[in-house]
Amino acid sequence: MTRMQESSIYDLTKKQFKPRITSVLISSTSKIAKELIDGLDVFYNRISKVTSPPEMWKLVNDFSEPIAQVGPALICDFFMKIGFTRYVKVDHHFRKEFPKLVILAVSCKLNPKHSFILSQEIADSVSITPFHLDSILYLWGRYGAHTN
Image (cartoon, rainbow, N blue to C red; front, side):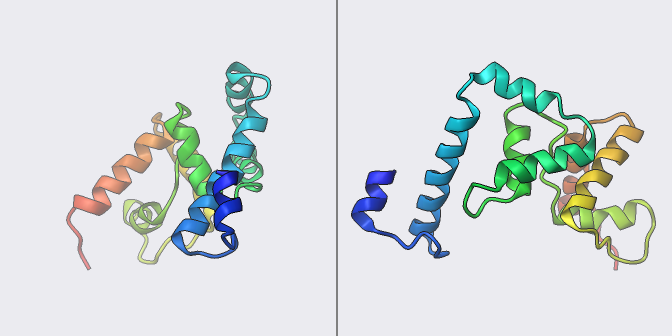
């Protein structure tokens, strides 16, 4: 990837497809290499030990920081896909469907951190994983009846 960048000399700050993907790949492979230096078990154990929602949010922010154009939501999605079902990419489905769930007449305008923490608390209160809560809200928002 670095050789490709050297030969093409992309402006890695641009949002165009090739520079953006190149930037993400270079910075993410560097980050993952550093994370895995002590082995996969150490990496998984480090993530497993972080259990409180605010600490989890800090972990995904810290993890995403050196990766170009990748934020905490995508790191949550990455963690979830490698087996950590408490990490969910909370997006517009949560903000859109949540007010209907609790019968609010207004939009749920929480920032991403508060949405993440609230999704953890709600899932815990009904004894499901945040992944399942997000899936339910996604399916409801995508295929459920919409009333205005």
